[in-house]
Image (cartoon, rainbow, N blue to C red; front, side, top):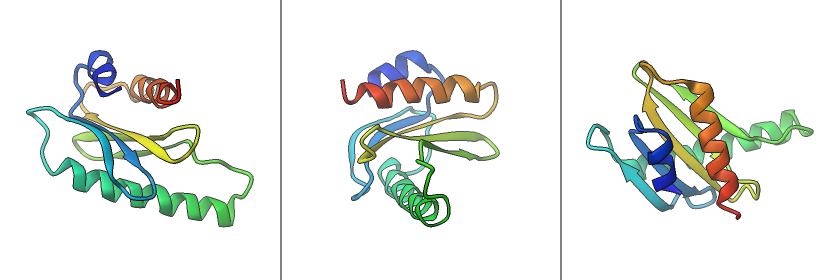
Amino acid sequence: MVEALRNELPQLLAAAVVQVASGQCTATYASPAASGNLTAAAAHNAEVIRQVQALAASHLPSEILEDVLISLSAQLHVLRLTPTGRQFVYAAVPAQGASLGLVREVVRVQATNLLA
C-alpha cells in the first residue's frame, strides 16, 4: 500500500498505515525530505481521529468520519479511515503544487484497497 502511494504521489513526504486504537504503524514510508518522527506523528494523528470520532458521535450521530485534512503552511496531511474504521492511511505532501483533491482520492483508494 505504501509503495502504491509512492507510485501515485511522487511528491509524497510521508505515509503510514496506522491502527486507530493504539496509534501503532503497520507500514511506513518517509522520504529524505521528510522532517520529524513519523511514528510519533502517526500516534498523534490516531488521537486526532479518536477525538473527531467522539465529537461526531456526540454532536452528529448520523455522520460517519471518512477523513481528516490538516493544512499546514508547507504541508498537507490526509488521514483516511479504512471502511472498518480500525485503521487509517496517513499521507503528507508538500502544500506547494499539490492537488488536495488528487491526494484525497489516491489515499481513499488505497484505504479501500487495504480490505481487498
